[in-house]
Length: 173
Image (cartoon, rainbow, N blue to C red):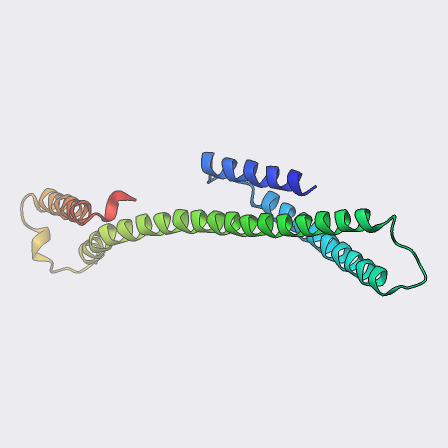
């Protein structure tokens, strides 16, 4: 059972490397819960076997000669299962942390893009708001080609902001 879970862990690890965006996190949670159940059983078996070993050493009237080999094998197997389960548990935790880290990176990239877009469109929105006010005396509305000049100025401002973000390395997301 532990080897099967270890194979599942390796398979999930490979799946995450291939397509980290569409990785099924529920599959990881399910495998972790199964591992915890196996680890619980292995710990209980270990305690039972240790109790049998102590009983064998302290019993004077009962002969455990035929069981010594089996008890030592059971004890070794139980210890091995517990160690393997602990290793798989550690790897599952690392896999979960990698998954969460990938999701946080994706979210951070999206937020960075939204921040850049907001920084570009905020001054344009301000200018649009100012020129959209209904006042009777707005001298720049009377100039010939004012609309084209304002539009050109807004596009130039947006392009300058995009260029400065690219130069600063912010748009690499």
